[in-house]
Every structure is written in C-alpha cells, then in structure tokens.
Length: 239
Image 1: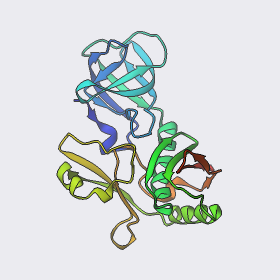
Image 2: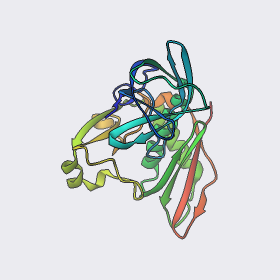
Image 3: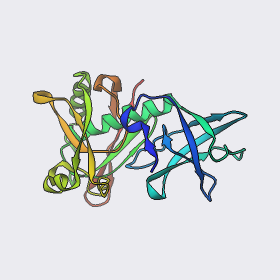
Image 4: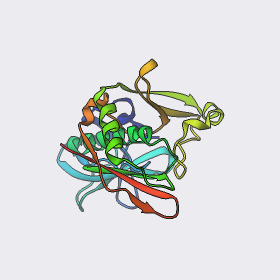
C-alpha cells in the first residue's frame, strides 16, 4: 500500500518518496504519497514530482489497486524511472482551499441536521445535497449560524475506531449515498470541537483545516431542488 502522508499531516507541502510502479494508464505510484487521491467528493491533489534530471507536473491523484495511489501527469512527459527518489511538491494553495471548503461542509451538515445524499468540494465553493422535502424558511439565518460556528475557532481533530464500532454506531454516518471507507479494520473520525464544545463527529477520509476560523467567511448560495425530496445547498469561500 501507498503510505498516505496527507492523513497524518494535512499541512505537509513537500516530501520525498520512491517510485515503485508505473500504471498502464501512465500514472506514477510511489511508496508514500503527499497527494490526496480523489474520493468522498474531494478532488485529488495536484503539484509536481522532481527528481535528478526531471520534473513532472501532476494533474491529480487517484486510487489504484492494492491500496496504492497513482499520480496522474498533467501532460505527456518523461516519467521518473522505477526506484527513483522523487520530491513531491504540493500545489498548496489548491489543497488548502479544498481543506477550507471540506471543513465548512461538515459545519453545514451541523446547521442543516438532515441526511446528506451527495456532495462535492472545489477550490472556491462546495455543496451538499440533503434529503430536504421543503426548502428552509430562512437561508440568511442558516448562513449566520454557519459563520458563527466558523468564528468560534473550534479545533478540528481526528481519531480512529474499528469497523465493528462504526457498525454499532450507525448514527455517526450522515451520508446516505457514500459509505465511509471500511474494510481496512478501522475508520477515521473527524471531530470539530472538543468536550462541551464538540459540534460534529463523523467518518471522513479527507483533509481538513486545524481550526474552523481558518475557513474564513462563507456564503450560502441559491438552494436548488434536485428530485422529489433532494435539495442542493452550495457554499462559497468569500476570500
């Protein structure tokens, strides 16, 4: 398996790795990855691979067989050879905006406590789809509550529980369409707040900011009807 460096430190911007395989589609697999692989509504990271005599722009990262992560080149170019020591350099601004949006969406699921049927994360905005038969009466109130939570500057931390523990606590899962990653024996939980100030706890494999104030102010856009009971709520980073 590829060691997911982003999971132990979402703020790591540069790291060395060894190339262990090339995929048939032209991807590069390393023994450890700074790049988050597309999943859970969050896009894969981009950046660069640099090695002696070469530099390769990376467009995204995707999951590969056997728990590996494949780095997808942004353009046809020379590949680092097998066994090469490469330096992975993250497009930090893009990743950090994904972290801000992703954490904001967790807080959106707090101010709208309804089952989530889908979601998507981008660099400027993100959205969650809710099982919401009727539109909210006061969107401005929701936006104010969301920004108030962000302004509390709550810590964002993670911990792990076993697959069995999660199965015994199904209420932790907010998403109806995407099930948390199971099958490895344990599941990562992301917690916002602590003790009496805890506001959210749910399974998640994505990257997040360390404290909610880092998100900055967000705006809730137009709420769209998607199907008989689904409604899409979008948020936008304001800086």
